[in-house]
Picture (spheres, one colour):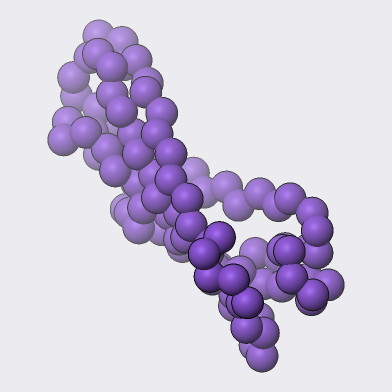
Length: 94
C-alpha cells in the first residue's frame, strides 16, 4: 500500500503453472480475498498448494500474481505495479 489510504483491502490472484506430470490442489487460479494492506508497510499474501509429481528430476513451477483493490470507494492511482511473476526449480526425488 503506497497510496494515501491508511489501509486497503486487496484481492490477490495467483496462477500456478506446473509441469505436465504434476497436479496440485486447490486448483489454479486461486484468489486470496480481502487481505488488509497497511500504508507504507510490506505485506504478505501466502496461498498454499499440495503438489504431487509422478516423475523424478528437476521441475520448474511458475507463478503469476496480480492484486486489485477490494475496498469500496478506493481507486488505485497506479495500475502498473499490481502484478509480478516468478519461478522456482524443485528437485523431485525418485
